[in-house]
Image (cartoon, rainbow, N blue to C red):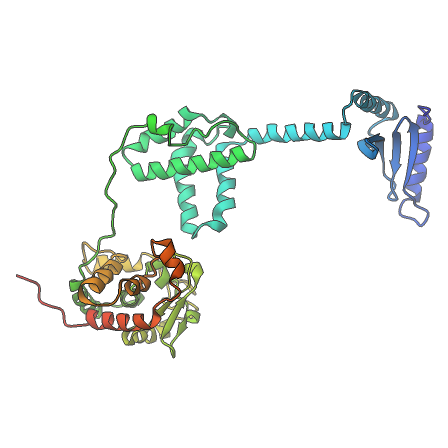
Length: 412
């Protein structure tokens, strides 16, 4: 095939005609050949660009060489000859171009900092986490402890020594925070490795790695929420009657339903069926991600009726701001004002559970279901297809009667 069929004058004339005919009924897309696979591609819109067409294994391929007139005829011919030379060496120029672009992308990505990667990872995982608080904990621990040391480092360059610089200052003094932070750094680095932004083993891994570089720590006993003994709850309930505000009702309702703080303060009127005496908490708000039905005792219904006039929105226990729920610290602050020591809001669930075991004959599964606990045995859980609702009606009725019974005088 003859080469160099075009000249600069011909090109200017062809391009001018294409621009003049652009967006008219006479406009046509066309290919004008210079020979040897080099073409000027004209669009109906009047633009022009260089194209090199070739065959590989019986299939037609094309590769762009740039727009005209920015890329001149002389330069287009030089680029076309480079493509021919590649083909003569058995190299597909289209694949080679994609590989160059891929390598450039990798090089750019490898320059990404740890802070940038951790931010991307958190946003990716945020929808999968139970609540916004968990995501904020990720942000806080990384910003506070990791970013000052490795935040600006390229993700590809972070090594074991860098991870140790982050962890050593808090490994002994803040063991729980340090352990969570290590796991979070490991997750971010692992995610970056999968994306091809770093290579090699994860320098934040603990087993067979950091466990030999960090000081050994004695296993600490698990910390439980401070709980008021169930025998003292009737006195608390009596004292609550003299308190004002929505938090006082929320705390009583929480105790009566053996519920968690988050479940109570986020409760909505749409979840309450007063006629059927049921509060249905959707799975999205439950720790185990399973819908939970709570039977409402007489006193629980009275509490709901008492707060109804103060609720102007969808939330049962309204906060100070319009259509916002009660603060998650409101009940804890109430206990503090009442000078209740050695007890937490969450601890009332423990008091309920001990009362179930010591003062009632309700089966284990019924008490656990009242607390919306998941069974530790997966096989048992698979076969347990009931929530023991009818049994729990009686259990929470008895619990209500107990907590509102006459307080026993303290032992001398």
